[in-house]
Length: 84
Image (cartoon, rainbow, N blue to C red):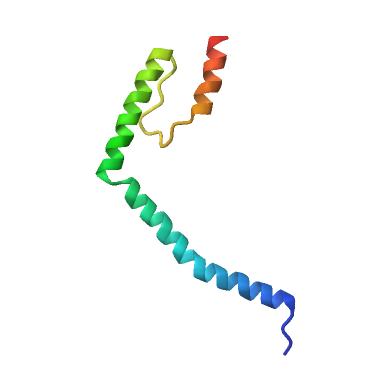
């Protein structure tokens, strides 16, 4: 039985997935746990409060509290459209 390049490629691809998948899962699991510690949650709430105060000063529409990330480009673009 001959082993050609395609067989080697597929075996290495499957082997890489088998080895890397648990490591990727552990990485994202640890990242999720760290982001849900009380200190991180407190820092995020403080940042949200500061962002909301700045939004009120600028007259921007407030984002809801369920937002996961602050997107400065979104607010920059909307600020340009609102000011014109």
